[in-house]
Image (cartoon, rainbow, N blue to C red):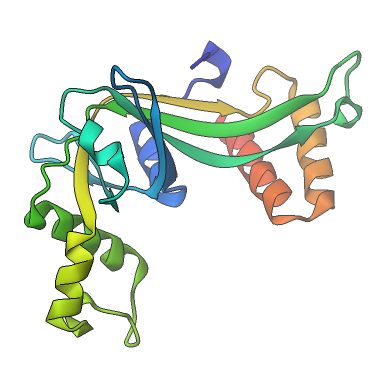
Amino acid sequence: MYLPASFRLDDEATIEAFIGQYDFATIVSTPSNGPIVTHAPLLARRAPDGGLVLVGHVARDNDHWRAMDGATPAVAIFHGPHGYISPTWYASAPAVPTWNYAVVHAHGKPFAPDEDDVTEAAISALVDQYESGPAAWRIEAMPRDFYAGLLASIVGFEMPIERIEAKFKLGQNRSTADRTGAIANLERRASPQTSAIADLMRWALEHQR
């Protein structure tokens, strides 16, 4: 990924929080016969050695898991908010349009051993993440034969992160007045996407990221 120094983010806590918030990822593996792409939710956990591990699962009919052999490189891409920035929003001129966004690229070699305990752990982690409260759905509520069929139709995997890149392109190369003007105009549009990128730009401005 092209990563100018002004847009690079290295803070581990911020990166981990970003992965947790925008956890529907694009996974790209690069076996010898060409790239394979899958979109799936991924959860991050800490390994005993303190390293970050991504956990997920794919459909058994999706041949991507066969490339997850622990040796084939892959990247998981986490996409944050993004939006168009008009040069008319800046205090200074001349300027040109741009697109602000935040992404994290996590590199590693995923491993899908095709073992029930790995798959069950991946499913349990996902359910625990998104189900809460007294009405929460629980795996244990499923009939055992139904659950067995479900388990047989998917394959869990783990991907220890070897290298991570975070690009937060949020106007850091502009003046405070330019950044403030862009934030204000994004907020006036009052859509979920523009509000999200405006919030992230304000955070970056306040923390000088």
